[in-house]
Length: 122
Image 1 (cartoon, rainbow, N blue to C red):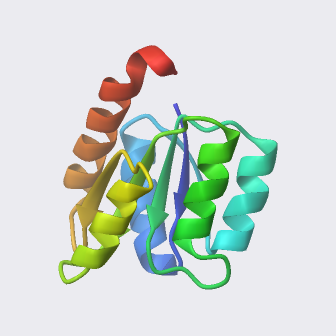
Image 2: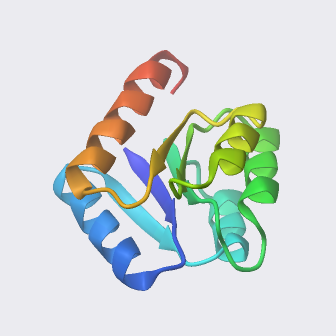
Image 3: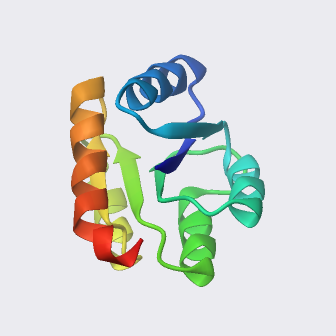
């Protein structure tokens, strides 16, 4: 399964990518929204993990671009105080969200859940 991870904190992105790779996922990492947009223009992903707080192109515009291209599942990463972000994500048809901080097992479990739910559409 091909996953695009969009996270601007390099250490967190590395830990997340490692955990996903160890779970058998093929992971590409984008450090900002503009880089992520270039990735999605050239590759079809089974899932996009999208940090809400991104430099450059924000998560909401990127989510809209993803939805215009198809039904790629999106897992948003947000903070515990980000209730407005969670509500906005739901309005934009996110597939799920994960609150920071989290551990790699929680991320992998949530990714598998989203992909299982979306399985027939992949």
